[in-house]
View 1 (cartoon, rainbow, N blue to C red):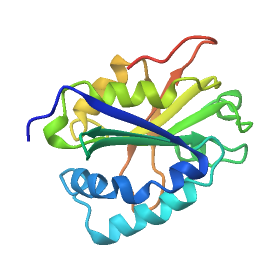
View 2 (tube, rainbow, N blue to C red; view 1 turned 120 degrees about the horizontal axis):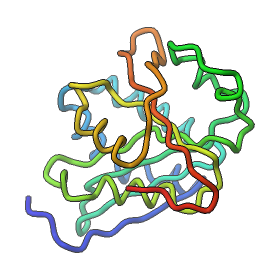
View 3 (cartoon, rainbow, N blue to C red; view 1 turned 180 degrees about the vertical axis):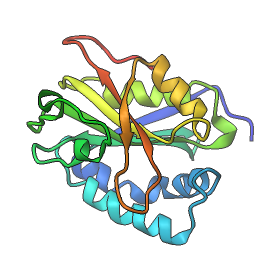
Length: 192
């Protein structure tokens, strides 16, 4: 597959994002069946269930990249709620003022994926920029598999200004992830 020069990007918010699951689920399956994820049908079903919950969160936003009619990448996230357990999953002790959430302080990226034939073309960076464009938050957080499993992703996030804050273990059977944060100074557009 040779990518075209004209990719289209669409951003969806709230309930509009909730209705787009069928649009990008095949891209999700393709990306996450590869190592190190090696996801199967039960993992995809779990993702679908989680997405339906995530789509109800405040600030939900989804960006889809298309090459013609084909979905080649996607990313989404939402505002961390005031009662979020996000920081409790980080193994390191973090200061209370760092982990305090109020429902509008931190935006979390849950997924950022690009199909293999379209990687290393700047699509992930563009998806990231469009996802964060116009957010009125102090910071953005995400987790990524540690190196060497996800060296390319870690490198990209570091280049975009993210810093590591510890290891996250989000649920009992989960692998450990590197928790990262991007501070957004007021009025500045995100990098990517």
